[in-house]
Length: 153
Image 1 (cartoon, one colour):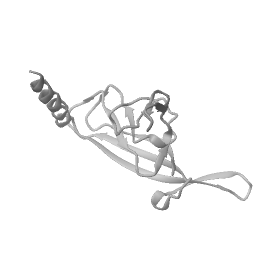
Image 2: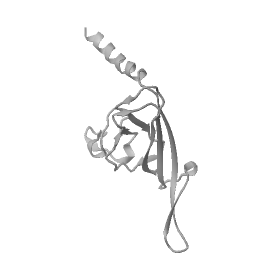
Image 3: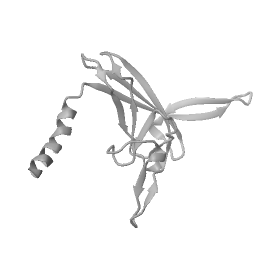
Image 4: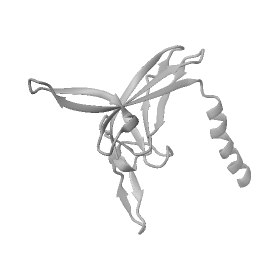
């Protein structure tokens, strides 16, 4: 009886994952450069993040669209962080994960084990995934854009 429960528990998430409607996601990443114009005022410019260097401030834009023929119910947009990117996750609408997407919360709610058997608070460098919860129902063809700021490590 116990073995059957374990097998069914392993199948349930797989079945739910295949039943998900199509939510198309595209990501763009830019480096924000701040320069000073001839009058001494700061000017913000966005440049391609192809050659981002450690310490660069990034703006990440996630475009999403419901490509199914049905409304999405309680959808969430989840993205793995690009390698070397540390989010500035202060937006309360953003949830983060520090364990590959297994658990979610705000940064101040997440803890990690230490090598000596204790625990410590998670820090932005620990974040592996970022998630936004969308409105309760997204009609077919509807799309939007989500953004977050990050720092290149």
